[in-house]
Image (cartoon, rainbow, N blue to C red; front, side):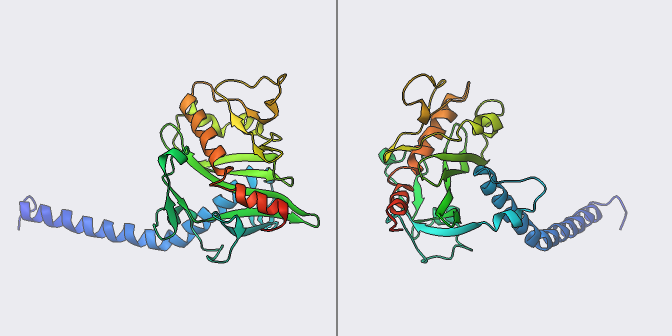
Length: 255
């Protein structure tokens, strides 16, 4: 068969495709355990960072040892062992009709469509009880669903920090949710005032001389829809369909 024959050309192309497919598939299988380890490490890093606990020069595993992982039943606001905290995937559960509920659009400002029945929360506890609690949050911005964590202090009313680890918002506009300065502006803000949900992300800037500014976050310049999305998702997850039943249970000692 000549080197320039059509049959030989197709044969060589097919052989190369098969070899490449085998190499790529093998690499994916071999690297999967490493990818899973790195994914978990990244998650732990974001949890620590959102609560202001991340330290440079100290291993993530060492730092994360101070955090306990619990699963909460969002309907009752109580901790549960119905699912294993070590293996439960809230993101996957939210897509499973058996493990989630469909939301009425009128009661879904965060536009998540379905809410998992259970959620994984992370807690730092000391001799005096809870020192910080870190809550998973998500909701739609301008272009994408933002996934992150919101941390509360021991009083379960004051924001300890916030961070988003996944989104595709516009760099320089909605992407400013990653700006350290903007995230720092959340620290110390009041999420609740005597049990009433008060935290809000403004369209513009908060007037610190006016009453209520202790619960107001400056909006993102030029990113009205992302700002509105962050406001909606935070208020949703701190509301009655989110973690408010848990927070009330923890305050009363019933969780």
